[in-house]
Image (cartoon, rainbow, N blue to C red; front, top):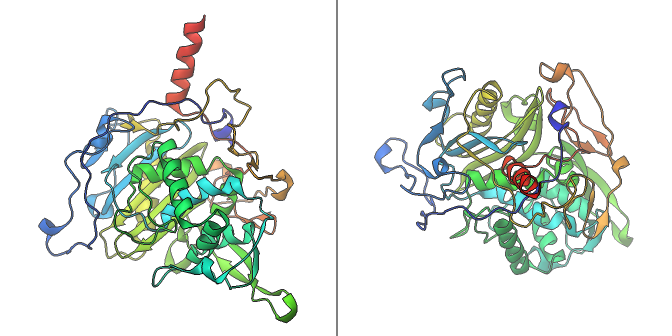
Length: 435
């Protein structure tokens, strides 16, 4: 809980940092593992949002005089792109091709949620029209949405977060006025967040020409999303009940259980649950390979890690490489010299009180455009975990109003995230100028 003693809303309008004009190609083909020279290479110049080092190809890390542990060996970190950042200060501890534009897969759903969650109260209902489910890509992940059946926004978000259901995403888009409008809204939101490597074509993350993001951008998006209470809860929900098929006469069907596809949260398929994990989102498509953005807490430090497209035969590689980077980040925190930072959104008013959320944003208080959420919807539960945070361990996973126990870090639902380092410095500068 020490991680949130100094809390405030993300603030400060940031000027766009210099960006390279070169647009790297989408990595459309999986690499030939036997011919390294044919593997896709990062562009020589990339965006420098967050710092010039983040625009350089290859691994960027400064061990700060040798006190920090070295990164895992190259064969243990095979991803085309990855980043390790402090979620509170925004400092980037290390990165590898951070701004390489790659296919994001279902991690794109984080941007969908960050964009649309404030619009719909959890209790809002929508009857699914057959047209709502049109246009889903072949082989899409599904939660089991049925035509002519009514679902709440809460049901749909559970389907989108836990099962990565493209059918749930399509219905949410219908509630928002359609796919095209939702794509526009998401691209606009990406610009506001300064996620300038990101271009949305399909809100569900299904492969499409020109649909790209980067490890840096996905981390920015996750950080923004995690400031919303509902986002945090859904991202860390391990299992939940989902509405069954309605019977004749509109009688509700028997609910069935769905499980989160995030293996670091659930421990499924041979992946060990990560101590202190609290979400966020995984993805997998032909072009993207496997992608993942995760957040975890240990001893007062909260880290965000994004891993894109590991080139490894290791089972669950994207999760295992994420775990290695989290382990390194927790060991290196406070010992490395940051190589960049996560920039704040463009449109946040720094004149607001630290206690006041930005207009239209939840910022951890459960209130957003279109409705209010009651804090008592969540019940904090503490339990003995393995190591970290004095043995107290909970994740955010809310199932029927009860927090599931996952990992060893206490990650609180009802707290705001702190002001990014850049915002704090700019706010302090203005205060000094006023004196």
